[in-house]
Length: 48
Image 1 (tube, one colour):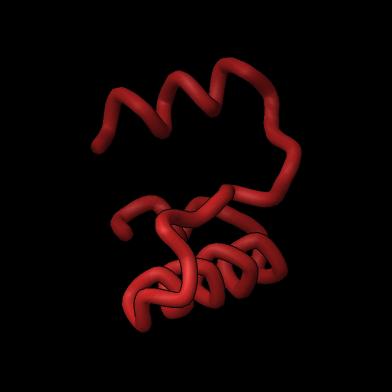
Image 2 (cartoon, rainbow, N blue to C red):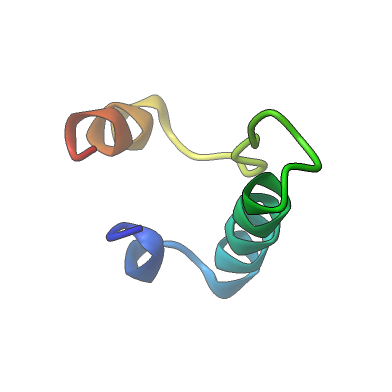
């Protein structure tokens, strides 16, 4: 993900852990488990 460098380290770890689980087929998807302002959430969506 190109956006990981923009997030605090603890958030990167959560994202990477969930992506790894998804890769191994243990879950159908992953949740982004952190709080951020809605403006930044729109940024995330627009950069995909």
